[in-house]
Image (cartoon, rainbow, N blue to C red):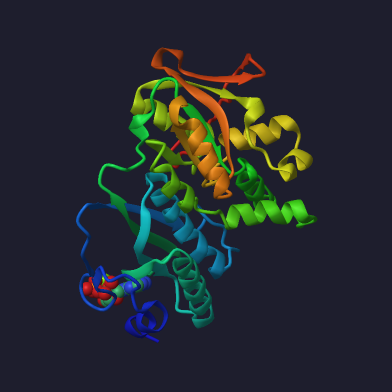
Amino acid sequence: MGEFDLIKRYFSRKSLQNEVILSVGDDCAITSISAGYQLAITTDTLVEGTHFLPSISPAALAYKSVAVNLSDLAAMGATPTWVSLALTLPEIKEAWLAEFSQSLFAILDRYSMSLIGGDTTKGPLSITLTAQGFLPENQGLFRHQAKVGDWIFVSGFLGDSAAGLDLLLQNRKIENESDRYFIQRHLHPTPRVELGLALRAFSCCALDISDGLLADLGHILERSQVGAEIYLENLPLSHHLCTQYEQTQAEKFALTGGEDYELCFTVSEEKREEMEQVLRSQGIKVTCIGQILPATSGLNLLKNGKKMALPTHIGFDHFS
Ligand code: ADP
Ligand code: MG
């Protein structure tokens, strides 16, 4: 099977949106965009050995490569629309491609997204996805818009993905329901798309937690020129994390572990109650974990009102 048969067989499907004028098959894809909207654009690469272990299944890999890009769109409050896929493969294995493609279209369908183009090359396994989404003008959730006094929230639970990676790296036998849960959270993170859309009306500042809460919150503080305090006792920890790990290790995973793909966002005191009501009615779990302070305060960790030391390594950085 050659490159072009492969593309036709595994990556050509009718696009879902009227805005897609030309999809897979020509030199470029062509799309239009409705008046009053802007395009949010994001790219993420997954490289074997850096972002996933060689043992990952093609289905999990396809899911995660879409999910991490969706998470960025969610963090901007964008409505996901389409993706393009640059796939580098060491060899053509039809069973692998079939499973990868099926899983890819399953998550694209779940979010009504189309695959509109890409590139297929030979080399060490790596996947680069570019995702785009619609954003009504002046409604994005930007890192630079946190204000002193805003409350800091996070979605879901923190630290479970780091626990899952820990298990995979130790190559430990999966023993119980908690182990399966951690690995599922690591391989199958939930992009918080619905939350991002709901936040457009309330929050003006959000990001997704890919490198660890403290490291990512640091980006908000820097861009917004503010400080913050975090209440350790409020961190949302799953009962699996609390029962399988010592408290300090569970907190460390939650504060510094990467790849939870939850959203961290801020909301003013004025809009807080209404926001919480709307999210509750949609069944979206969020937790208030702190407050934005003036820049001179820096980043502070409090446990029941008592100041705690910041961990020495606060997040993932490819080059340090
Ligand atoms: P070009 O040589 O002009 O870059 P290619 O030969 O690489 O074009 O690709 C042919 C068509 O197939 C293009 O429309 C491209 O977007 C699409 N394509 C290539 N690889 C993929 C892929 N993995 N997934 C989806 N579309 C792809
Ligand atoms: Mg090409």
